[in-house]
Image (cartoon, rainbow, N blue to C red):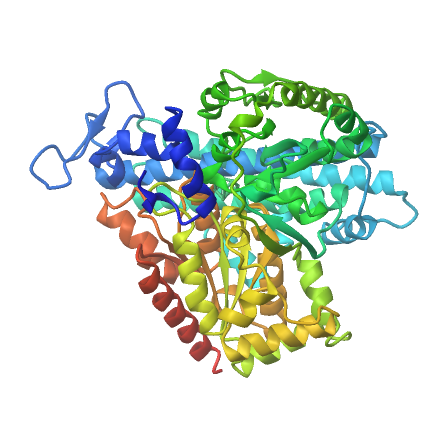
Length: 635
Ligand code: NFS
């Protein structure tokens, strides 16, 4: 087996197991797809109507327009923003679900849930302009949920989404409103993209891309409320020590992986596992239930409960190959349909839970807020049954696991900084940015992709930036990569951080009683939690009296692939941030679209996409952006 697919040693150990058992993994299927369609890669294939499919000849010899007359620029722009719409729909559907659950709690229903962070609820209410005097928690919860749900249903286009305008700098909100890209309704922004890209509608690539910006800001709105309302219901993450990689699966426990994105079910699975732990022991598992995470659902429970992470997106099939995973419970998004095939070769029970995400081969246990605990218990019972079928001879758990210090919500970061300066917690951060101990900040986000060696770009770029005193933040599968490879540890700080960065992380760590520095990469959560990083950036920008595009802050999505990532990236750019992509977006068939995304947007919103597939060069380019921003601030 060729090991160039992943730098994760646990994956390397299990790929031969797959081969031996005749199991196709994501990498085998990727190979079988070669050569992939060149037209699709360039974004010049249009399948929007049934006169097609049409494609434009990128070399200029063949047809330059589709049957309806759409040229490459129109086709590429339409394809891109349809992806953004899908991403925005996914994140915000997740947000709607959380908001609805909060509403139910406010109504006194959904007994499995309660408000775990009252202070956050008050703070969110205040931000949304909700008066709280004399109201009890339930009333406030209901009003916060109602105002949040208004962002999905408002028909007055003159009133912007409240979660968007209340969370960015004033200048940014004005700029985006003046450009006509501030959404007034998340669902309407998604619907607008679908309608304007229908056959015979918007053909102007610039106008189409502006629609994409609006969709990305709808995505921002949905992500922001997902994170904040999840904190209200499940608690705001605080630092804790846990571990990551397949070594977290235990031979003497009933192992259950929670996978997907929405914490509504996984939270209750964790609660139920504690309640029913004796049943697992009675079934013969000395250590009871062992819950482990995959993708962003994994990240959500990792951030709040220190649940260890089994793996990130691209290697999601591997936990089944250990022969010791008894159940995989999935909710929504980033779940490979192949799991339903692979689990047939082992004893693992694959359990779908959402009516919109069913997978052939899986057992479906429908999840509802009202009966959340019942569903969780049923899932645990299925896991116990599967455990009885486990074949000890087939167990092969790669003994790789790294310590990971996680849980760096914005509140946790400000809390840690306040130990240095209780009156003005941001001051130590700003002082160290100004004096150059910290040159800048990089937020790593996004997925893994078969287009690159798994995790490699993340690790290489991060090490390079850290050596150059860039403070590193991470979310989503990027954070998964760093946790699996030991970069969320104090040791990594001592080993890889430049002197200035090391001094700052040590000062903060010591002030917080950690007997050493903060970890090299701060885990800020799942992909919707990119908004946690934005909230810190907005606070810093406001304190400096500048807009976000002036900050020495860059975003890097070096292994990105999903439509959600397209939406997040475009959202970061719309907020004014330089955003690196390490995989080539499917837009290069249009010179116009490519130029807008990588250059012209800079004039319009301050942010732009920086595409660089070579990790070393990418790090260099990100460092020059940071340097340029520092110059702009005269520091
Ligand atoms: Ni983000 Fe999370 Fe991972 Fe990519 Fe998928 S799990 S929401 S989309 S693959 S980072």
